[in-house]
Image (cartoon, rainbow, N blue to C red; front, side, top):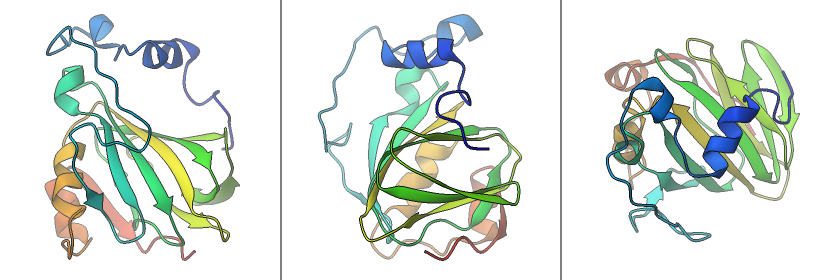
Length: 182
C-alpha cells in the first residue's frame, strides 16, 4: 500500500505540476483559461475551514477544473482524523508534506511520512490520523471533484455537523465506522 508516486500515474503528476487538471483529455472543459497562484499557507478563496483535528485550505476549487479535481491541504493535522468511509465516485490521493500520518486503507494500516503518498480508490474504505508529537501537513486530491467541496464547506465550520452515515450519504460517501485513534 505504501508508495511514493507509484500510486499516481506520472502523466497525472506532470499535469498537476503544470496546473492542468487533465480535463482536456476527458472532455471536461476548464471554466476559464486564467491561471491562479495560491501562496503558502493561504486558502484559494481566502476562507477559514477549521475541522477540529485540522485546518483545511482549499487549493483548487471544483469549478476551476471543470469538476475534474478538488484539492485541499490539511495544516496542523493532530492526533485524530475522519471516520472510516469510502467515496462512491472519487479517487482520493494523499501526499504527506510534513509529519507522519497513519492510514487505514482496505483494512491495512501503515504510517506515511514526508514525500510519501497513498491512493484511496473509490469504493475502498479508508481513514487517517496524524501521529507523533509534531502536527502533520498533507495535500489531498479528489478526482473527479464530485460533491467534496460542498462537503468540506458544510463540515469545516465551528461546531460543524456530526460525521455520521446520513451526512456522508448526502455527499456521495458511505460511513464505515470509527476512524483511527491518534
